[in-house]
Image (tube, rainbow, N blue to C red):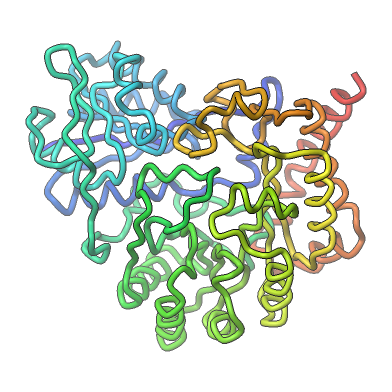
Amino acid sequence: MAKILLVQPYGQNWEAGQKDMSRVANIMPPIGLCSLASWLEKHGHEALLCDLYAYPQDEGRLRDLIRTEKPSFVGLSATTSSFLDALRLAGKIKEEHPGVKTVFGGVHISSLGAELMRRFPAMDFAVAGEGENALLDLLNREGQPPFSAGGIHYRRNGEVSWSGDTSLIDDLDRLPFPAYDKLKGFPRQYKLPLFSFPKSPATIAVTSRGCLFNCTYCDRSVFGRTYRYHSPAYLIDWFRDLNRRFGIRHLNLYDDNLTLNAERVAAFCEALIRARLPLTFNCASRPERLDAELLRVMKRAGCWMISLGIESGDPEILRRHRSHAADLELIRERVHLIRRAKIRVKGLFMLGLPGETRESIRRTRDYILSLPLDDFNLTIFAPFPGASCTRDLGRYGAFTENWELTNCLNVLFTPQDLTAEELAAHFKGIYRAYYKRFHVLFRYVALAGRSGDSWLRFLRHLGSFLALRRHYRAKRSG
């Protein structure tokens, strides 16, 4: 039996001197690490978990856990923006405990694993792609090659070696439920995005893996273009367990696209209705995967909000970057269809993709303001290493690679004929235009009393929100 300590790094990527408001709005549990922990323990190993994003002050606790528990391995999950912080932690761990082996995983590793291993000696192993089989094999063999599972980068005779292509789990129902109980303070320490849920406690669950689409801005290096999912029976048992053990009353089903298989979603919703679980849920969908019949059964099962990946209001940007680009009028019709089903609808948009122009930004702004959305989210294109449109970005504009700031909030790529300052100003301007409308503000006020603790969190941190607004105003005027 081996012992591993799984770590979620803080990965601070907020502007220096400013409070990290992303943590005020959203602290979600590291569901991937919870799943790995339960999988490893099912196979006889011991897994501990330390979430530094939820508890940034817990680096001392991390060091104490390593000293007292003496794990053989420390596994660090890394997004692009958190990778350098994970690397910093690994360096400290190696200094204080040279015998501990570090294992890196996550989307950044899946995109750049061999390159990272060659550049950074604090990485002993890197697991690319789906992690269960690779990490289990790594622990079973106590870190000694050869490995039978694919997906492992390791060092042999001073060179980086590779155990072969990642092996995927065909039947996801073989997986035990994620080990939420290993998270300190769960569920109270973990918060879904403000105004995105009606009741608390709330948490996330992922019911499928992968996506069959190939949008240019998405990094598909973990699961590839596969699509696998849990059965309705498995999901009912899982969600009943969450409700009984932790009192969970709302779930954000954090799949890339819950409705990719409409028959499967309808069967799940019918099972949820029969089970009479006191739960509501959110999900994400592509607009073209919805119809009135499916929406009716989703509403009966407790669907509270659907997030639509729309991305742009410019047809040419959609054609260029969105796999199977939907017609803007079809998207508009689906927004109305969701609202007629009495489900809240949230639009997800992005600025700054290659080919973006002042005119395409204007079209996106006008399109956003023309839709009867209950909520919306706008991000700035983040050039993730594994996304297809990130290759050769310099041909289409100015690109500054900065992993720490690759968080969908900073301008790292500026399309031709735009400036970074201009793009940032449009980003903030669209948010102002959306939220300054009376009917939008009224919808949020109407959520008082049925939005979990969102209003309490917002009012508690109102001073910080206002300080951030003053900061950006000063930057614009300075």
